[in-house]
Amino acid sequence: MRAALPYLEEFHQQTFVIQISGDLLEIHDSRVIEDLALLQQVGIRIVIVHGAEAQIHKLLAAKGHDYQTEDSILVAEEAHLPLIEQAISSTNWQLLTKLRSCGRQLQPFSGHFLFAEKKSFSGNFGFHFTGSVCGLDLETLHQAISDSKLVILPPFSLGEKGRLWILDPNQVAFEVATRLRAKKLIVLDTHPLPQFGETDSLEMTTDNVLQWLKKNPDLPSPQRLQLNTLTEACVRGIERCHLLDGRVEGALLAELLTPKGAGVMITNSSYKRTRPARFNDVQSILEILSSPVQHAAVVLRTASYIEQQIDNYLVFCVDEDVVGCCEIISFPDGSAAEIASLAVDKLYRNQGIGSELIQAASEKIRSNSCKLAFALSAATSHVFTQCGFREISPKELPGKKQKNYDFQESIVYGRNLD
Image (cartoon, rainbow, N blue to C red; front, side, top):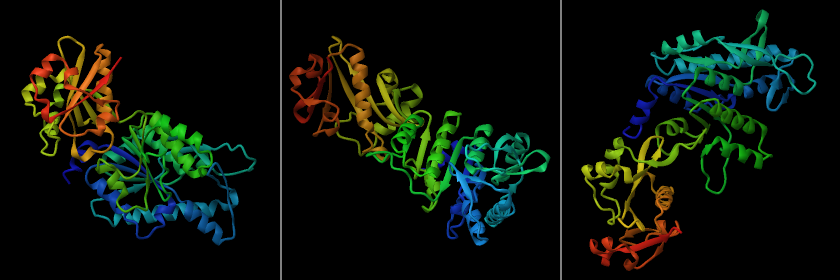
């Protein structure tokens, strides 16, 4: 609960658009509906876009029909329209019923908020009823959300003269999220999450995802469509987009309410970064340096000292939470600078944050025309050697440093910055 509280505060009264695949809704013992209800009840504004892929396929197969797709989008033929409409309506009703059973305070609400027109396909499919979203009844939708209703949008809509158009859930979720300026767009499906390289990183920028898609042309079309949609949503202004395997128990809550998460998160720029410290970072830096599990070589600093030296500190942030820091101490002759007070919050260790801080500090020292960056450690430090430092003699350090420190219990690491 302590870990979740900052997220709940940040997300209070924020709008999340959550797309749920029809396949996931077919899993009877899934508790994802309860998790959605919980998020709505703690003050997050939820808009659900549901698919009905599995339900449509099942109903058409039972009647001996098959259907066509283009780029994973259903081509709704006129002869199949009554069955497709039945499958979507049934799924929508079941979702409404399940959510209503999660609590009396919940107010699930569904309706026609979308405007659509006929979709153009490159293939020759003849007359069909597949549409594209061309508008949104934003005023009514905003009113429903502000009235604390949990809005559910099915993948169909009305067009001119009352014609029904069958829609792609990915496009519906994209259009709703971007037009509502939602805080997040989240896709819950039943596919294993993609592996983005040797690091198995599940935190990606839009550029990284697009490069990965080019290198993986054999990725199944539905997953490619999802990743392209989420990436484009980030480009269009959604802060964070997420792809989750909804079969994993509690994945939605873990992704939203814990630092580690449980799925793929896509941003338009890296949400983890090193930056110069600010005055409002002083308390966070002090707490990190004061942790009892910090290395013995970390010299304790007072709040007053940190405030006075704040311009010499770098911090590493996850979103805007400070989780690591270091200090750069320059010497009068300008030939060398020390990287001191390197520390990382215990929840974020072994993630390369120390290395990021060292590299950023080294670059700043180099930009000040210093020839030597050095650090002291009470034990062998692989983090410094991985960043190009080597063990050096204390005699190579500035005279002032040699006079005011006992090196007998310290290993000195140095790096020439020529």
